[in-house]
Length: 320
Image (cartoon, rainbow, N blue to C red; front, side, top):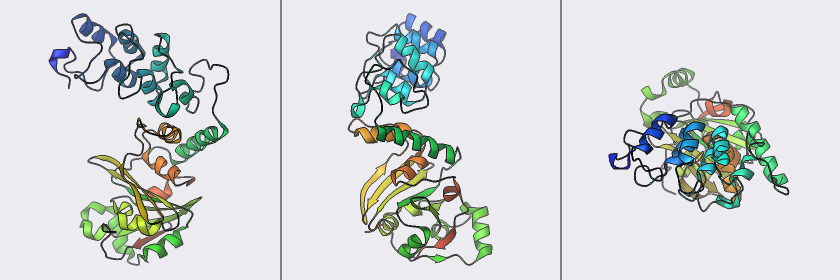
C-alpha cells in the first residue's frame, strides 16, 4: 500500500476509477509518484481503465517518463491492454520511441494480438524471423491453452525423445500401478522424499518433456545436467510460494539459474530475449517449451498422462 504522504494511500491493484484518481490528485496526490518510487501512470497503464489513464496522462509533466527504463505505453503494450495504449497515444505518448532491446512499443505490438494498434510509419515492420517467432508463439500458446500449473516441475529437452531421456536419467518404469494411482490421486499426501523420485516423460515434436505436476524434481541441477548432454534443456519450477523459477542447462552445464520465465523483459536483454518475453508474457510453460524449441500440440506432456512414468535413482541431484 502507498504511504499516506503521497496521496495514494489505500491504492493497490485497482486503478480503474478515474473519478477517484481525479479527486485524489485535486486533493494533493502526486501524479508523478506512487509509493515514493513508482509512477501512477505506469500503474494505470497496466491495472487501470482508459479513463484513468487519460486522467493521469493530462496531469503529468511527461507522458513518456521512464520507470525501470520503460514508458507507460510500453507497459500497456506488454500487458496486452490495447485500450490503455490507445489512450496513452492519444495523450501524446510516442509508440515508436526505442526502448528495451531496440524495440519500440509500436513495433513490439506488431508481434502481438493487436498489430493494428497504431498507424505504422513507412519502413517499420517485423523481420521474417520475428514474424515466424510470433506465429509460433500464437500456435503454441493456443495449443497449450490456459491451465493451473502451480507446483509443477518441468524439463524441456531439445533433440531427444522420451526413451533417450529415460536412458540418460538411468530411470526405471514405475511398475506398481496401485501406488502410482494413489500418488496421482493425492500427491501431497505422500512424503516428498518418496514422491519426488517419480517423474513423467513424453516425446513431443522437437524433443521431450520431463514433468512432475507436484514437485521440482525435473529442474534439479543433476537432472538437468544429465538431460542436457550434447543438447539444450530449459527447466521450470512453478513455485507456489515465490513464483516461476527457470534454469538453462547446455551440454551438461548449468548456464542460468533463478530465472523468471513468463516475466517481463529486462533492461539488458537482447532483441530476441525481449521479443520472447513479450510473446510468452505470463505464460511460463510456453516460454520454457519455446526456449528449447519444442512444438507441443497440446498440454498432455505437462499435465499428463505422460508416455511413461519412471522412478529416478536415489542420488544427490543438487551437487554437480
